[in-house]
Length: 322
Length: 230
Image (cartoon, rainbow over all chains, first blue to last red; front, side, top):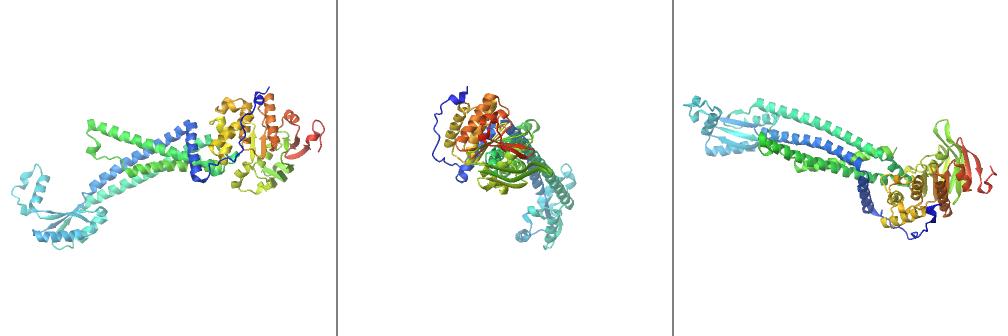
């Protein structure tokens, strides 16, 4: 006997026109978002795999960024040592000093000008010859020339910038000699160029690898759910309707992966660096190591979401448009 | 309702899966498609729900020529066609209720209405108590009834079934046939592809026999049970 046949049907067939939830994007957007959350709940394993992959990939990228940003900060500090010294053969009276200072400051690239008197010059010389001060016995301050020490703006700290500034400076009357440590500036700038090139290359490789790994992981997870795409298509869902929840899911996975990666990075930064400080005296405060600035954190979150979105979109294209 | 005019389809050149098919199925008709494996039954059904396009000829559903439809129009055609398969094609990560609700979600129904209509349809299928179970916890017959509920929940004009009872025992076959007949009584045209002789005999409906991609025989329901008319 058929049990199902014996049961009396008590539910009344709905007769009024059903309310549509799809009027406007708000309704559908809400539906797609809820659907995406439900999908995540119903497919825990594949979502854990995807979020885990995105987390690891972005953790590597953000660690690289942390190192790169700190190297850039260090380079910025070192580059402040690029300065030009202009020597005079005689003392400059106070009123001429301000006139000259004005002229130098008017040159493009000058950031700050400091006047070094005879006494200051001798004091610095003594510091440099620490332990052998006896060599300076009998040397009178007037023996050493007075000078202007000129710090340069950031855009004039490269080799060409310094040379351009020096050429202008030499035209200022009263200056007999200009020194700026040509060799050091050249080496420092070559080092910076190599560091940025290597960083850029490594960053690009990392990004390509991350995009490749994440999009393939998403492709596999969508492949595992291709029956869902087929059923949706069978019951008359448009391509957009099928894709939208997966895209929302991709964005959620990407944002979650990025958020977890940044949290782990913060824990690593706080835990490892501060603990290391206890026995290595290598605390962020002392070493000057900084955490990623907020704009980098926002960019990483956005990158994660974009990765999830683009990964899902490209994978869906393969299964739905085929 | 359904009209095929000189339809041919070849998956590979020189190997036709269907050849010069002419077929008319009226509104509210019940047709069995039968024939040996590889005769073209599944291909014919796939043509009817727009999963394939004919190499030659015209396929008209409700006067719409689906051979000329662009891909973006196909989903709207499918909303008036219910399809069931031998392997049920249920989503195992979703409950019975959610599996059936998909059809109405696609149509944009509100949640309250979906709940009422899905429960009503599950009740018609006799599986309303299983609404919160996962499909893998149901028997084969129950799973097919969920698939049928999904196909019928929006009262489609056409119901297509590809070997729907292929993996079911006799008791379940009877239940499924009864559901087909009930849907047919409510006005849905039903096309069932099967080589289950018992199902066809019990059905007492029009029979279309395919072989090697061609219609070789058509039996009207009046002439059933022995007498055959070409």
